[in-house]
Length: 539
Image 1: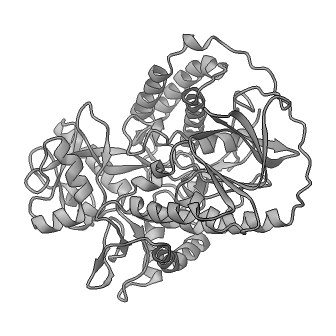
Image 2: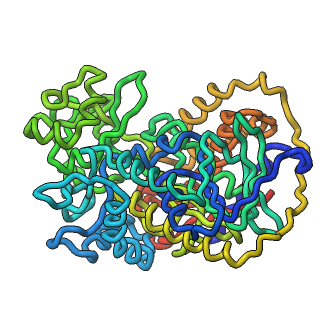
Image 3: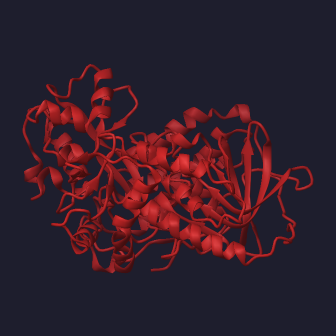
């Protein structure tokens, strides 16, 4: 299948004069401070100066929001082959077998490593407590703080990275664009309130910037998940892959007018039921695994049941579970629901699907190398081949650890081979055709984009809807892309518009239904589409 071509409006989002912008130098530059970025930082040779750039505080990454846990074979009754089989089955024919086997085999080692770093997983009779989630054949999900696993893992990793003498952490610093010369990544142009624009030149660069959930009105992702890494890699010439595959989590707390909150898959793993507005338990009618079906199946079933009942949500029912279990396993969810007057031990939780995890991303090999020389990537920003067309629950933190380690080791080894006396290349910064910033209301435009994506590029898609969405986005983008912004909000908006166009291009190209990508006009899964959709940029 020929690569799809998307034209970024410009190579760089902002003009710059290299004589007027401060220059900093690092051996390895890591963009993103989630689990993948920090694991990469821990893999860098201590002789190398490493800079970790994160656009908010370290504790606010997507990784910190992860509730359910991290998957790995720790039960003697389980084995690697089972975990591999479950992953491949969930991926609906697009998983890369060698990648799945390599990552799954490493899982127990990576989990033990987290314990060595100080992560305190929940325990039962002295052993790591394990739970089961949708799509898994065995109990293999290690969790912490009941339902706040990401928070605990990130606590331990942040403390470890902060103690490393060779690692600098730049918080509240936005990565505007990658710097390239002779088709090689040479670092990044970043911005902060305190320093303004700064060139950070690096021998090797690793992107670990997370996801793209803010493309959609309904999402579990924090406000920072604006597809920045996908956009800057694409503008720099890196290949993207499988961008049609946005995974929608089946159970997101639905309170009209409020922000959305993830209700972890582990709730169903512990025995919660999904019921509709009439109290009918419906999942058995859609899938033999019932509530423990893979995420794509559950999201489609919930959507169908909502349409059937003409009700805006369905409900998670935990009321039949022992109060002690609910209070011990789900303290965070209990606390969140209490804010809305819901006692989850006695009342059902209103839920509906929401955008959760971008499966597609920057194409990388088994070592985390991208198609752009000098650029590596790890975590949600990548397409590794592990998840296929539908990610198996709790494989994401695992992927971040494995590929963070590999990208860090690879970038470290390559940086050691490059001498310190490399010269700064000359860069061209063409002037932008700009409009006055006050003419564009950024928040209104972002809300309009996310609402459009939810309606026409969401769980159910069709050629008419996709073309209609693309036409509207291209119309808006005529003046969004011409704007020279001077704020993070503006740059995020431009990144979202670019990645929205990429998602639609990929969704149009995949004329079938597979995993998290459902086309109402092409409802069947086709053997001819058992391949990746590649997206290339031409400026």
